[in-house]
Image 1 (cartoon, rainbow, N blue to C red):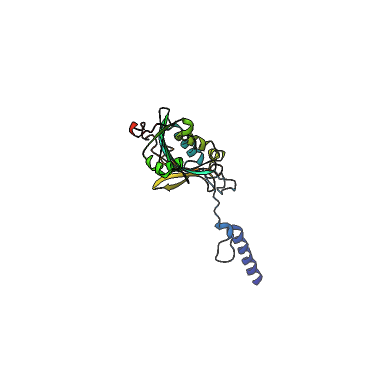
Image 2: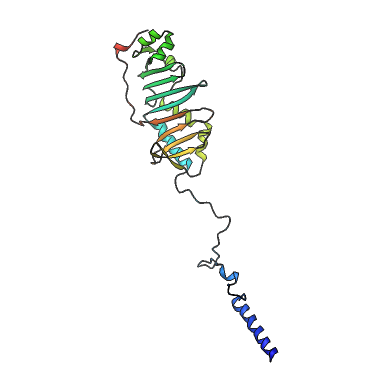
Length: 256
């Protein structure tokens, strides 16, 4: 009888293992705890290692860049201020007017020569400046002081001695730099940030070109930092709303 009872118990244990995967304790067998993930077709829903990467939620760097470039280069007018380099020397510039420079003013400040102003209207040019500029030009502080508020008619070659600065010229030079045009191939999602309280996309990277574009979908360029090959830091505003300038009144024009 003892042998029979043992045989019966062994038979019951084997049946339990075969039918329900009993492990012999209170924990369920490992195989019974893993979901199969099968869908309605009967195939496994376990994700594979080769699943496609997540698509960008917002616009890509390339998309924002192309929109910004098109908007900037087609703008009728605007204002740009900041720093550039001319023949290795740092300059501060303030350019406002129509994009091609036919009607604009350009302020240029050098480290040693003060601030000059060039007024350009209908192909004619007038030069003005602060006391430091005129003192540097004349070599005489007294004469320089007397020239403040005065303008001198000059030739185009003199007007562009430190660079032919126009809104479109500055933008064209920036967007054709190889380090900048590389942004057109960047398919990563554009990073949104804040620039002076305005939502903006920041394109580029530290140490290279960087471009801030308003995050309104219109491609409004707010700031542009140049690459190492052409260092600059420029802020843009008054797009399409630049002032219109007139020649200096005859009472302040000093004929050479």
